[in-house]
Image (spheres, rainbow, N blue to C red):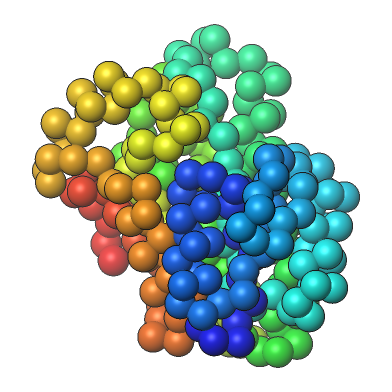
Length: 236
């Protein structure tokens, strides 16, 4: 990935931070956005739910590095485990705005430069919940599932410019975010049900991202890769 510039949203911690580190280790210049500070990489504070901040972040990264070649729509929030009847408008809007609105407008802001250079990689981080569903998480699963429709549309719309669009849909992963929302005991309980007998390590989704961002994956677009230990099976 030498000479490529990558922007990882939500890259200050968790899966996003590991993706950023892996892309940097493989030669990319990396920028991140987050609500929290990050001293490892060029970082712009930006809220996915606010379009002006999203556009400002893309402009700041392009000013710093001159381009964005790889966009990783990773920023997200887990939401609370709630039955459908208990999901209020605020909770619903927060999940849709963070996951869907953010990814949509980051892509809109970054794709113009990719089109001009006729090369680009758009990779969005979904969830195995979007593939198999989840009780008490329809608001989260629905928000993540929306990324699949967006990605497939983008793949077709941008193909003639040499831009690919794909998804990585990991299973539950032990990160600060999931520990706060699910708890260690519940994560351990669920791990026992995975065919491979464990949850993904926090760095493992990044390997799929790095491959999709590389020249090796030039013919792969509109696809989903699920590092989920066999708990979700996709027709890849």
